[in-house]
Image (cartoon, rainbow, N blue to C red; front, side, top):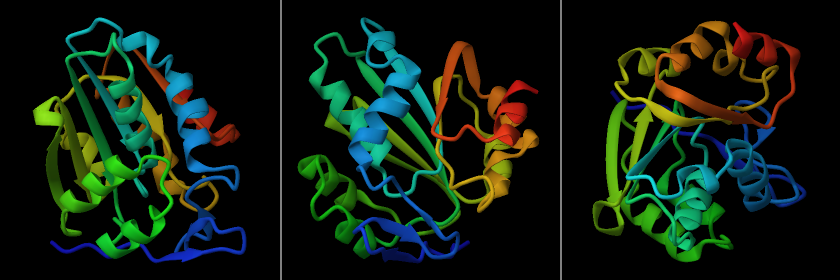
Length: 207
């Protein structure tokens, strides 16, 4: 089933914003800094994947793909990287290929962003697997309703990246039910990282 793509505008600071949620895709300081300092460092990466055969990450809110691109680059840069990297990301309103290309015109990962844009699937409900680096990096885009998707996913993620829009703008991405669903998709010892400190989110994660 076709999905409604994201409606993206560039705000006065030059930051992409989702019109339907009135929220930015990343802070004014930049997507790369947030990806590295909040989501990678928050999950103890790259140290936690060192020497492993494989490592799986599960993200809520693919957005423009900055967390995936930062993770892919960190994997490439790490001589102790796992043999395979599996990145699963949920997105209800994927950007169009044209918007993705526009937003990554000055990407800090130009080669990786170009590869993502070239492989970008249509905005159709369902799972869209994409392989990079001769199959050693697999991106699984899960387009559609997050609650339904987490009930259907069969995986044991080593790290969670909770990156939906702000809880007061997109509460469906931060419900207790969704957090409980995500907890069934993680491996023992998994970690989680998020940018928000909202009380409702802390309570949902603790439930």
